[in-house]
Length: 305
Length: 276
View 1 (cartoon, rainbow over the protein chains, first blue to last red):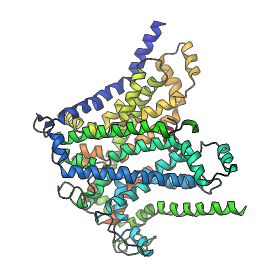
View 2 (cartoon, rainbow over the protein chains, first blue to last red; view 1 turned 180 degrees about the horizontal axis):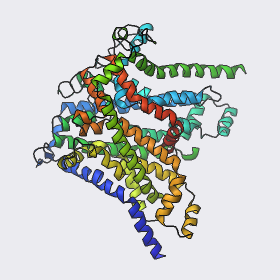
View 3 (cartoon, helix red, strand yellow; view 1 turned 90 degrees about the vertical axis):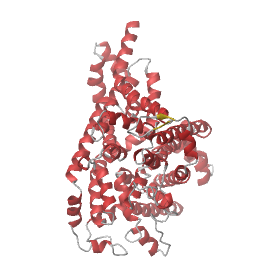
View 4 (tube, chains in turn orange, red; view 1 turned 135 degrees about the vertical axis):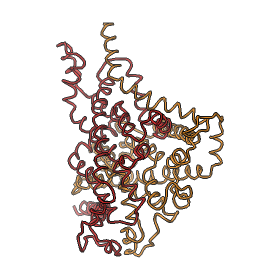
């Protein structure tokens, strides 16, 4: 018996070995190094000099860092909830009994999510262009104002919201799968009891899909903390992204946490400062995920209980 | 009766309008890629070009070494799919169907690994590859896959393996089959759908990745399509026709992949999302 246990342990370990090595070399060790580097000043050529907490205190008075945090919070607090709510709305529409072409619509809503982020950004750079893009053509046709989407700092982030809405198909598919799990008997019973649509949404639908909502909240929080490609490509399309006065887009409105970190590390070569940003990001992400899971006990119901 | 019909008509119209809005960007990308420059600047834009031209595609091919970039992207993508297909199932197997105590420690670490933002490991990893003289090569973009990173696929496969009939494995063990035989002979052949899903997601992730190639590839003949297209838009951003042609050619393979494997896509997403 003891022999079997021993053999199982060795086989298990051998099968898991590549990942253990990968985790240590590619995640654990670099993470520890980031901690160490965050207390040093260095660029790639010179070796690190220990400077204590200077990188952290310097960030607090770094105007661009504060703007990057604010812009990232905008994505987390405005773009993300808006996107999830719209995705829920569309999945509710798709879940109505006897809706025609459900699977075709599901495909249409999902396809944009497979478009490469760079191609997607280039495409929207075109679509939102005031001279040639069709968005302003439609707005003009409807007699609505036609903003300079990507050059007016008041409209750059709303532009990113449009892109986020176009690529919310993942969330729609997840919510739709979750909605399908609601037993029709429960919906029928509520309907017989005379519950209105809003009451049904609050008392039956939302509790049933709450695990899916938690999942999409966690995944999207991590995504928006690392929001990079769209902002980087759109900014680089309209000027030299390595130019310090341009890399944040109009009035630094496209200066996000991950783009600023990248710029600090690989354009200004202030590796220590960028490492401090990485450490803060790790804690911010950890705390947000922790809070989501902790509070989820109050609002997530498993199996519709 | 009448009430039911009306309550169904409004959502149907809403879906139709939304559907059109979601398709429109694709339509305009495609139609612009076939338009003459003079027509692109016409407002309001026409849905179907008056004159079809292949000039934009020729331009795109002349400005970016499209075949070179496609080949580079394909090489990196193929290596990543191969790496994940060889490695991820082994680890998932260890974490689900092998009865050993270590998995109670390793599985939570896999979850933690999934959540670590890339920015946290990016700088030291870059330094390591720099010291090894590997920056500027494909190696930093390939090695992680052969060590099971990113670990999302391990998680996906583990969820799938958990539902595997244990009696099958038990019977094989009674017959004296080794763990390796059970893994390659019984488990893997029965888990083809999950392996297909892993291949698709790895393909999609690597094919479209931007940050890693941006970090590690500096010489233009090593560029992937992502970096190539970004360089193109940076240099000639008003040449909408060639830009849309290049974007369309870059997008086409993933769209084809999606339609070829739509079921696995949807199953993969719901597997990762709802059943966890």
